[in-house]
Image (tube, rainbow, N blue to C red; front, side, top):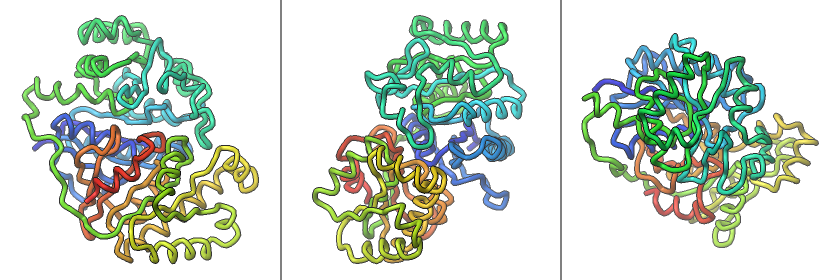
Length: 421
């Protein structure tokens, strides 16, 4: 089996989202945590997704990590590369999407790629270059209050243009609807005209398939998971990918179950409230962590070990309260304290018999997975759009659902707990 697609994801939940999309489309996909070491070897897979935690770190560090992942995937024989970021384009005017994309193009000796975070199945669509969340412009959605990457401009041509010195253009919906050949011609014209990036409109799955088919000859694709829909077909047409069974069942992990919720997104806050109605819940207070970190973490662990059934530990809070905490502690310190707390709590709970874990929030997921020492994930069936069931490879085997803060219905935690075996 040769590696066809090498993927670099800027957070852990996004990585599982992309891996799930590729698995559903029939590619044997393995997710690896951080850039593997040479001694780790290359997993046997059609696609490998390297999960980084680079979305909100300084741009120079994000570039270094992404280039390391790209070089490892090149050495592993990848034919095409995919830079995956959030479907709400989570970033600031300093990056990290533009700077990383620029660095990857340079590494691959290429001069053109696409920008397409659209994911209509989860309510993310692009029209005339503007990103919508449901019926709201991105800039009108709850993402405008994100504590780390507030999105106050929905025009992706403008947003990407502030992150890169390169020219950014638009392939509008009429061209997208005309099909892959028309899109490919638009790419060629833009490339010839000195554009390095093409933002692609997409309002439904057929648009994403057409864009994916048109991107067959691009060495680097950038976007959300949705635009990967058409890529497996390209490999099949080239005779490189056989038909395989999608959504293969995962082995059971057994053991106790917990939900760890660090995201403060509106969707996660609703999910927290639904679970709190009928299940034990413990709230992590950043102020207590700042005052006596070890004592606050020990209290959470002791409480968790007393629970007989599924339970919730969360730090999610209303935007006004989050802003107040950030004003007192500083944005970076407040976030790092919460991540460190979950990173300390998760291994202690696993040592006590927990084997099924749902994590909400990309930063929280990254902290938890690293703390648990997970190196690779087998990807299983979808729980809800964008969130598959996974099982860690190695001992002990852990059943994990890593959820982007914005994803999932109100009862997602309960659904995920029922699906993780």
